[in-house]
Image (cartoon, rainbow, N blue to C red; front, side, top):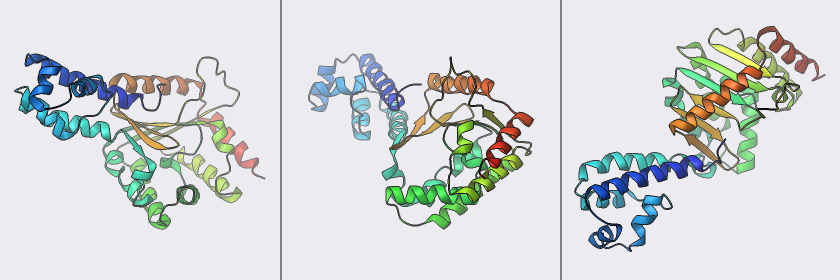
Length: 281
């Protein structure tokens, strides 16, 4: 996998290359463009290399100076998308967890095929309300957020209804996920029991990667949600990362496929989950 910020950096470079082509088609040098706009001559270089993100005003001024004002709106939208690719939790959750939960509802509703890999937690589509509450309470306390846990849990549970709609969910869990005590023994027992029930839902496929699987060629990766073939979301310690570059989407899709080959399903997966329940004592 690439580094957390690589998608943002590459997207900025792509935007910079688009700006460079517009400048070159206008027959302008970087210095010539800088003179027209009253900029320091290093400014176009920083934009074109992706080292600095242009503002919306910069993009419109650039395109107008190059005689291609019609290209500005598309590039402004691209720049807005880049700005939203790497969002720190402090910004995303500034108004509470409820709003952060609601922000992804449109994405969940329009996605037809979900591919989810989780090396740490039971993922959102198959969480119980008690498990959700334990997770969100810990996040609230750790990040010092406002207390809107009840509302946030309600939104998260409402999101889960999509598993009964026109969607498919392929979920891969590392076996270790089943052993992490989230919310205490009773909460985990209920969560693992619900996981067994979710396996019976026609739209849901759950695979467990055994701890003794041969990881010589593919070790555990960061957890991710792949929405159709359009977007990947990765939850980092400090931020929420969105991946949209096609070649990176292909990497995540290929990684999911390879991880899926390591997993067990059906009765073998149920046996692993049942053993985890029994171990709770």
